Image 1 (tube, rainbow, N blue to C red):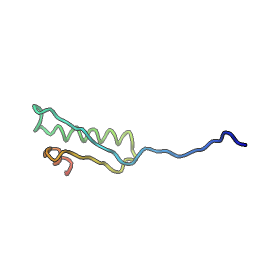
Image 2: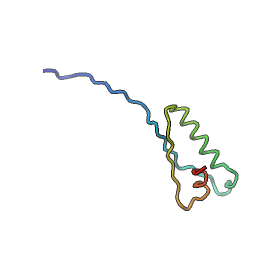
Image 3: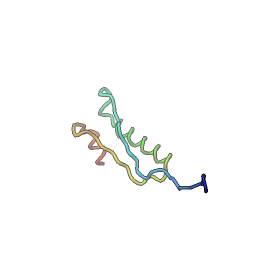
Image 4: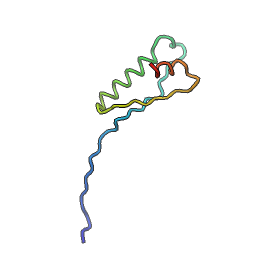
Length: 72
């Protein structure tokens, strides 16, 4: 009876990227820093995982500035 056997499975990083928790302190708002932070984070994640084909993000309904960034 075979007690041990090997198996293999190809595993690769997800093609979906979840972007969340981008924040700018109130005293620094209105300088497009949120847009810059979000873009820099996405570029870095794509560099680390070049298979990324989808970005998922969400914001609170009360966060109009970030909702606008997400829709652009």
